Length: 88
Image 1 (spheres, rainbow, N blue to C red):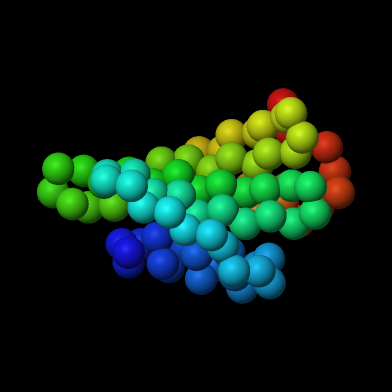
Image 2 (image 1 turned 180 degrees about the vertical axis):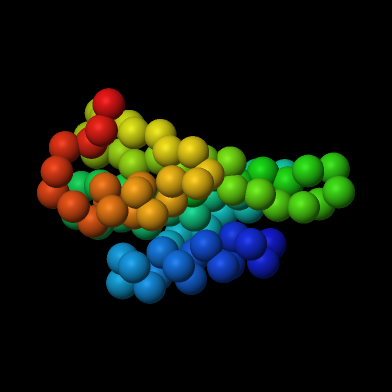
């Protein structure tokens, strides 16, 4: 497992108090954690130099999905842990 994925998974585990499900498939990886009916998915991609980066984060709630940029992980985590509606 790529170390950057492990580091982000540790962050999610600390914030959500749940162990994320991690999948790696070729040059893509995901870390998923669910709280109630909400799910946070971190999407990673590897470059040709085998350097892994966080591409984006998504929070899903029913049929709604809110997408966050790389620098918005704290905001995405806050949305996962809150009861407020997903941002547009």
